[in-house]
Length: 225
Image 1 (cartoon, rainbow, N blue to C red):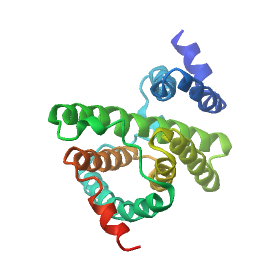
Image 2: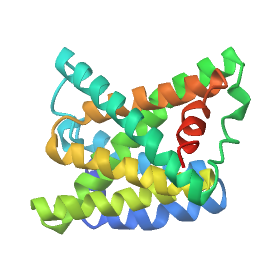
Image 3: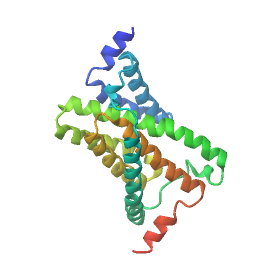
Image 4: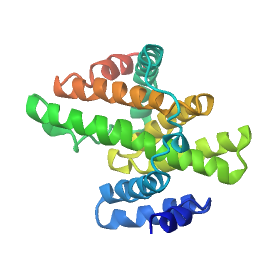
């Protein structure tokens, strides 16, 4: 049974079917879209006897990886503080209603932080970059051009999956995803780098919301218009 499941799910076209079917679960709950795809990816991982390299996890977390991820996170934070301010000026505010209840709520903040590191930082990178992007690039031909095309496709897909944050959220997440996908393109065997960048980035964002300071930077930048 295990071998049959693996042989079927590891067929290259399955990634396309998964990406097409997953959004249908959004009619039930948006979280099901994510967990359906993640379930398929984990079945493939299980069937391969946990061959993590199939998902770009060929390197362990090292001090150099941590330092590199922190540097990139800082650059992303500065860059997207500016980018998001421009986007909000023209596309409206982010819809942060899904995390509003953590403002001043330490327990809620702590619990959401744990959930974020497991399902957003690790889970989303494992699914969107480790499975979707890598498998799609291999399906298209595995050339550098096809990896770039896969980065664009999966970034659009990732951005649309954040529609609950509003139009500005989809555009911002698309741009963020495209940049981190290009980093994966240059580090195809080091998905943990992306996991750390994603986790550190969201840690900053959630902490600012918890402290009710999330709009300070964007408000200051918007004053420059």
